[in-house]
Length: 319
Image 1 (spheres, rainbow, N blue to C red):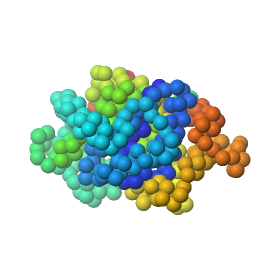
Image 2 (image 1 turned 135 degrees about the vertical axis):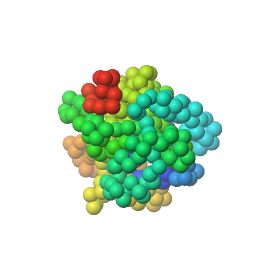
Image 3 (image 1 turned 30 degrees about the horizontal axis):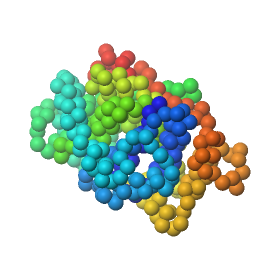
Image 4 (image 1 turned 45 degrees about the vertical axis):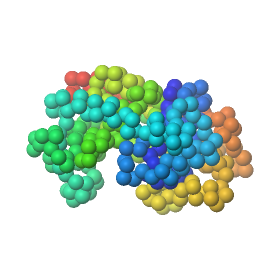
């Protein structure tokens, strides 16, 4: 087993991030696996040095060790920042662009898309315009037909994600020429040898998009990514029932620390969320006691199964 913690330095981390980090750590350590720290920093406009430092501060505060990855901001910038992998990302983009009926150029802005589609689903505006792929100020999108669906199955349930209806044709290269999160994530996970990915249930569409992208890339990418197993965990919600997130302004762990919070407060929340109610509310959890009590069987792992991908249906069984 090899998994990763993959935060984005676009804001200070919050309790929802901590829950996912601790759950990933528990799963890996329970199975004697390897844990990698990856920091997704391609979004240079939102990245700040203090946000990168906060990732290291948070992992240190939570006492979460990891086996590979940067140990400081300086080492991250010198060795592990995603700009060092741009050659691999662009090679993947070139491979997709060379395939017929796979990629198209899109001149739409986010504002224009939201006007036509308030849900954010791409309405297909540029899909049939046949703009040259090197048209300035255009994004590249992967073709996703309306009927495209991706399925994930475990012993407990099956998720069928109607990717065509939820997301539509999604961006693989932004208008500024930067590879998208989805493309970079797939390339990185395959390069880093990741076998298990832990993320929230809200990212099921992202999982579906990345599985489809890996299938289109084919070769070693689809071979590696189709073997990945996923843990889509429940979300922590605020008092209004909204998921805790940076965009919602959720209280940061940095603020918690400044107010004297100790990591045991996080462990208590994790214990409750992973079903350890058999212990009394007064039980003082440590990371070691959490690991001892953790039962990974309560989280069925999702595996990709046959999917319906109309553009390249003849190779869908590879997923």
